[in-house]
Amino acid sequence: MQAGEESQAVEEAPPETTKPRPKRRGKVTVFDNWCKGCGLCVAFCPRKVFELGPEGHPVVVHEERCTACNWCVYHCPDFAIVVELVEDGEQERKTGQAVGGRVRR
Amino acid sequence: MATQRQLIYDYLRHKKKFPNIWCAGCGIGIVMGAIIRAVDDLGYDKNQVAMISGIGCSGRMPVYLDFYTMHTTHGRALSFATGLKLARPELKIIVVMGDGDALAIGGNHFIHTARRNIDLTAIVINNATYGMTGGQYSPTTPQHMLATTAPYGNIEQDFPICELAQVCGAAFVARSTVYHVEELQGYIEQGLEKKGFALIEAVSYCHTTYGRLNRLGSAVDMMRALKENSITRQAAEKLPPEELQGKIVRGIFVDREVPEYTELYQKIIERAQSGGKA
Image 1 (cartoon, rainbow over the protein chains, first blue to last red):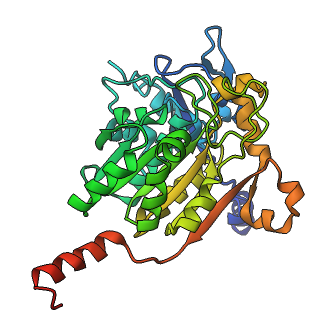
Image 2 (cartoon, each protein chain N blue to C red):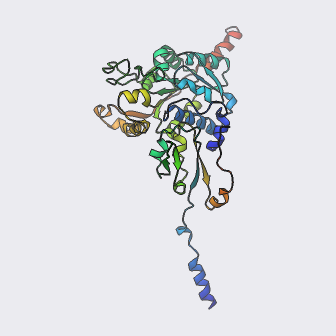
């Protein structure tokens, strides 16, 4: 009996090899007052995180897709995008904090 | 590596000068980002870095950066930088120029600074036109392309910037585009670490004047064209010259050890002070 339970417990524990890799996720912030709406981030984002908003500025629509590759950060000519790396599971904890905000006062 | 938010607070004059004046999608801002990341990665104190520019769109860059900065006369950025380097050899000096600034108005300064091999990092942002003054053709406008002063096409050959610096004796010569910004950042880091004249050409075609006159599309289309029309130096060596027409060849062209000017100058000073004996 005891031996059976033990073997079941061993089976349930995932072996190291099949453990999913921790996902890199990013929190994207766009500073609208610095953005000029060139559309580079919307056109080139490999995960299609952005969509063009009504005022021509990018809007973060699919933040869950962001892998924090920083393409948009490196290619934004106006320094208007900030991507902060979110560790897995920290997304919920961080939402309550003021992560965004405007750089210019 | 610092996050983008820290970089903005540390290196940009973010409270007064932003948003910047460049057109939407202009690559000069991308080059500026590559410079601050390169300086940050190398761990330089920002009070040990000086940035000097001439006139033109790229001449606005020192306005936005929190280094020691100098916005000088047209074409003379390298001359001011030479003087600064001789007076304060411990500073890391970055010279930012446009193609017209570096090769037309300051063409002679460019040749002789490369020949002297003084320890500067020169970044030439090649937009293939005089963007700020309204799209006149510059020394790097490709042949047969239109400009406001060449309505039937430019009949002059364009200036190969990297090849010119190479034959003049620069210690480090590399070219990249604003699409390949991480590669560009690597070249800027190597150029800053290099003892001697380092020239980095950053290709960033102007979409407001050059692109509009030649119907090359929007900033996004021209960025895509940079991706599709560029080729690494290793791949370019295997292709016949006909297929390289209109391609941008990226890579390091020269990385060599050449005696550096301020060191030689210091030796002359020591020799003169010891009465010519040493």
